[in-house]
Image (cartoon, rainbow, N blue to C red; front, side, top):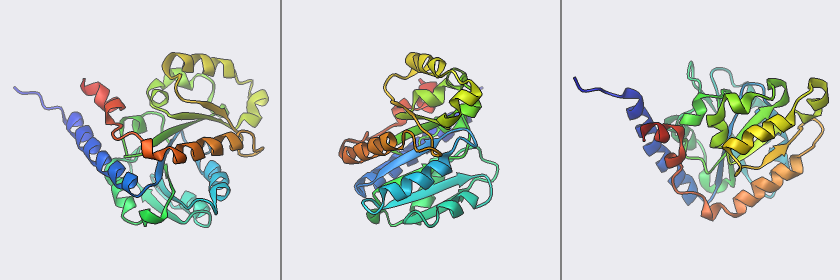
Length: 235
C-alpha cells in the first residue's frame, strides 16, 4: 500500500502560499516581521512601545493572531495605521492562508512595517512560513533559562531573539549565560537583544535593528521555505 503523508502535503501547500504572500509584500516595498513566542512573553506590550516609536516616520500595520477575543488588537488599535485580528479557533499557530486573508484587509502600498503577532506557542509556529521577511522570537525571563535547549527549532530559524522582561533578571535568578551558551550551539547568526518594555532597556537597540532591516528590505530573502522546519523534515 502506498504511504500518504498528509502533513507533508499541508506544509507544501502552506509554503507555496507563503511564497505568494512574500512576493506580494515585497512588491509593496514593506518589511514583514513575524513575532513568535510563548504566551505572556510580552509581544503585545512590545508592539505598544514599538509602533509609536516608529511613527510618524513609518506607517505600521499589525496582524494579530489569537485563538479567541480581540483584546490584543484593541490594545493596538490606536497605535497603528491598521490592525486586523485573526482568530484561529483551536489552531495553535497562524498559517499562510490566514495571513493571505489578513493581507486583503490592508492597503499594503501605505504600509512600511507589517508586524505579524503569531499565536503564543513555542512549537507549531516554527514549521509554518507565513511569507514574512524576518522572524523574531521573544523569550521572557519568567519562562526559565532552559527554553532555548528545549525548543531549539523556533530559535534556529530566528533572525533576532529578544530576551524580554530583563528587569526581573535578579529577582528570578535567571542564568543568561546558559541562554547564550545554548544559542551558541544552534544560532550564532541572530542577535540577542536584552529588553525590558517596562524600563526601556534595549528598546533603542531593537528599533535600530528594525530600521536596519527596513533599509535593507530590497535584499530580503526571496524564499524562506528552504530553511523551515517543514522543509527540513521533507529532506
